[in-house]
Length: 115
Image (cartoon, rainbow, N blue to C red):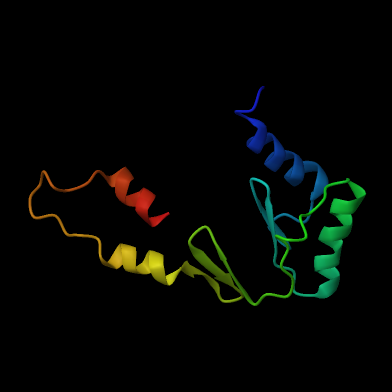
């Protein structure tokens, strides 16, 4: 498999084995990051205990607890939902309108800008 598939393998292993039953219910996984959105301290502790049981460590310098809102991959995530960060929103709003048909960017380029 080599290093090309290692991030996919890690994400899949975390989802299927380590945090099975918790993904989308009280946490999300993106490559090697785990975002816990449990509504109680008990739910958040379940994720940490499951990681400990499977010998999956967390970097204490990168761990944040008790946040009401988190900025992640140019998005703001909170209990009210997901939105763009102010910088990303400005980038989308300041996108230049094409003046000619040739100046129109391909659809996939625009979708990459918005994702």
